[in-house]
Length: 187
Image 1 (cartoon, rainbow, N blue to C red):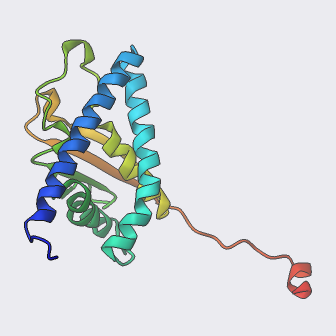
Image 2 (cartoon, rainbow, N blue to C red; image 1 turned 180 degrees about the horizontal axis):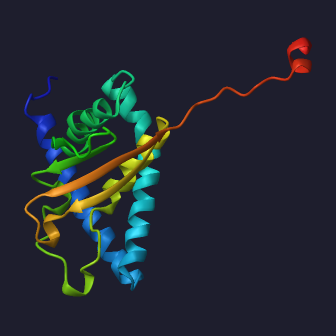
């Protein structure tokens, strides 16, 4: 039995729509559970972080990307490979500073807000897509890059585009534990 060539993209679209609707229901429930937007934002960031630290293994296995040699290369891989792979979009990458450690990902279309028109006035400080920042931060940490990831612009707050800022803080060295001399001789 052969598979139809059109079937895979259709399934991808359906599962993305299901994810977006489920995500909206999750955010709505969090807003009911927490009175303060800051608490919801922290929860979404934490949830995203946990997703990111688990998602990086899948990303590395499926994408076959090689080790990035610079922050700019890392930002490009996030935009061109990771966002395309998991959300079906490719953000534009812009460099934010001459030092080369700050970048912005500009999303012309944010699929997480496909079914959201605007935030209620009582939730004006809600970072609806905070999960994305946490996921990027968690994934970067797993490849030994400490980063600060924040929303700079948000279409749900009246901006023309969604912009995520990434500031690479440092490369975390993966040091091998030192052996003491007595361990070396015992082996």
